[in-house]
Image 1 (cartoon, one colour):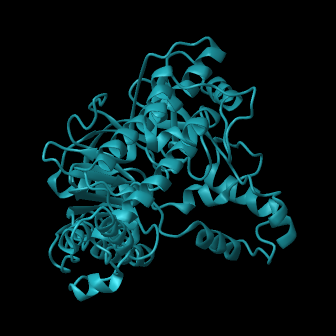
Image 2 (cartoon, helix red, strand yellow):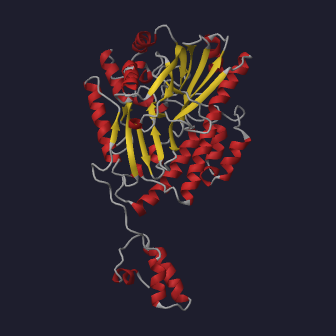
Length: 468
């Protein structure tokens, strides 16, 4: 049997022809009839594909308002990308948080986006799976001593810890890696190498005082590092194979893994393992700091804000930079979650309201109106920097203006001004919109003392020196 035989039988040519012809010719070689061979070939024929939804099929709940012209441009871009996204056939509803900002080409879920779907979309949790917050309370501990201790034990920047300085996740977590094909190869070794690290970008360790009690608190922000990124890569490849078969018109970033498949079951299980790894990754750093001070932790809790949650309605709720605000969002959930704003502002401790117009979510922070590069261009223009960029004097002036009175540190030794408060939306506006839209109730705050971020770890990179 040849491909022309299948075309003559009214079938559309595609990648499925090769396995179909192999099966058909196997039937013929074993003495089967041409009719039997044709039936064997038809078994490989893909079913009808799912068309994109119409523009008005899915309602988008908008919980954001522009406070100025810059924010208006941002809001319009967020709405445009969400309108394209909700045309994905399996998407059922969507919401936009007050801190939303675009995060890729049109149709890509924005930061501050929530999407409910019949399936799992790896692109809607992105590579930083389980980016999350954790807080531990250290009664009677001096804030500077705690910040010093954290600085001594943490690890920021690219890559993991070198051999001889590595820590191991729990045996239960490592065993779960070994048992899941999505995690067994590649992610397992990365799970050890990257354990007790915090990465770069907007991730941080923040020390402050509880507004309610004055007790010292440590708040950390980071995701699943290389293990999560490798799971994301594998998940996107699997999802795209389904997309090509089920809905080739769907935006590649919105490809999905059907929940009822073996691939879907294994991916969901892998997500839970990555979640457990990330939780341990937060608390091992907290415990190391406590050990260095011979201090005790009185209380702690955590929450992810970049993950996929399954509710009792059977749908998968993708929060891309959105904090769960519905009851029992996880087996270890408390009634409190954490929303940071910027290094100069209090970290908010909130209780969710399960607002229907937020699909049961609240914001995850202050968000950006500009990309990092655009913000750097603005600062360069404001401070009169030349083509080589901001000088050390410029950076010192910016730090004094934006972080005066705070113990702000950069692990690399070089400040990253793209992560300073002016890079983000107005904290006051985001907080006001949380209240205006009824997305969460602020019940306490962590008043800032100081923080640590990766900083500009690329400053002395060979490629940058060459460009300069």
